[in-house]
Image 1 (cartoon, rainbow, N blue to C red):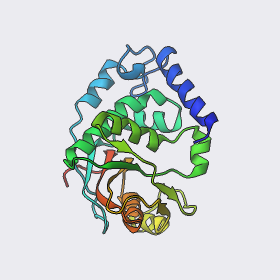
Image 2: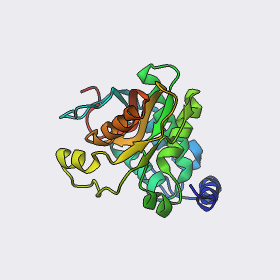
Image 3: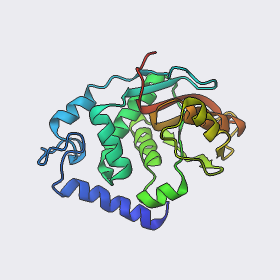
Length: 228
């Protein structure tokens, strides 16, 4: 991320904390100060009630590591994730990172390195921040772990919206490449949302190809019922 983008990120965090803004979860115009000052108490309670658990899509793609999601992708969680990712509500990294940390802990793996799924470079430039890396670092800090951006795009991919499970898998085939680390380094792939699992499969493939030991994956939310 560029120095300009980093500076914008800091300013965005400060703005979230000091400017009167609507609740990112429900749109209430005068939220009481909740988590990070961007969610009203009711929406904070929704996130606090989340219970992480194992999750897998149906059909489950070949190569998907054991995956835990903090919650389901609905309601307040959808709005909060989109507000952080697309609309500059950067202080939301704190409650969302707490959810991701809970999902990581529920894997029960011990000492691992969190590796975020990368966004396209153009998307990072347009947003002014790398949302997945921010979430990974926040979750790592809360879980007493480390995070490292070991994945990067190898080629352009089409927009995933509207694609079927098979089309997503084809679209992402060999779309990522990993930076080699110490052989056997234990890693967990982290992302904001799991839909079909194709992105996590490709991330895991790239990391394994670089000699890293993929122990599992964790996401803030899954679009399908957890525990399937």
